[in-house]
Image 1 (cartoon, rainbow, N blue to C red):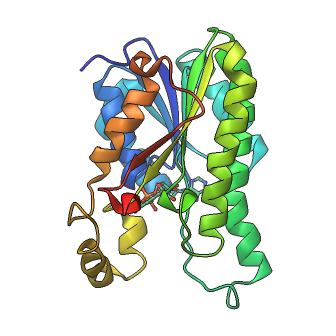
Image 2: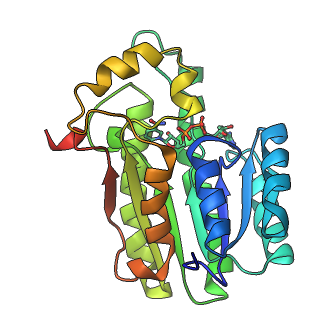
Length: 244
Ligand SMILES: NC(=O)c1ccc[n+]([C@@H]2O[C@H](COP(=O)([O-])OP(=O)(O)OC[C@H]3O[C@@H](n4cnc5c(N)ncnc54)[C@H](O)[C@@H]3O)[C@@H](O)[C@H]2O)c1
């Protein structure tokens, strides 16, 4: 459990769900972790649980000013940033004819513009240590179609990952995307769809939905030096769903 000793990580949407699983594992692997979210109570209690190597900062990932604060506070607390996990996101299950322009722009901001802001904000910090790893959380809906808005943003995250990887490679900064299938988190529970999800699980080759920690294993691999030659790539964790 020492894959990230000496590394400083920023993880967005880290107060619950998959983000919280990544935060816990990164700390266990020796990283110093700043995690951010809009959910202050959940963030504060996770910070208390994890002790000195984890720090929670309240951040709205759609705001450039919040990103500037996160970078400067991370540097002053732990030092320059080695790893960024752009994990924060929302789902939206409305049809093309139901979704309003305002809702559409909101999901673009949270799922897509945030990733642009995050990558742009951490690069100067990563340059101080001559490298880094950025992990952008997309979805299988960045590979195959799903809900309008959500699918659009997750395809964009996949594309932005490749564009940034090409531009940042000469700086020693790697950028990869992760594409989870159906994962047991509050995002899924909140849609009031538990029964439908269990029904859907029958169509997954592995016949089950995944635990957040199963995605963390891939995120950890990409954050660590084990993945030193991987950049601009897609890493799918979906129990075989998109292989059909
Ligand atoms: N759960 C799944 O099945 C699944 C599948 C594929 C991809 N994903 C993606 O994985 C990521 C994590 O999702 P999850 O399932 O853990 O969901 P979750 O809802 O449990 O966690 C998402 C976190 O993002 C935070 N967040 C939302 N808007 C924010 C904002 N403006 N600023 C800062 N934080 C904000 C939320 O407060 C929450 O803590 C998301 O990007 C999601 O799209 C999830």
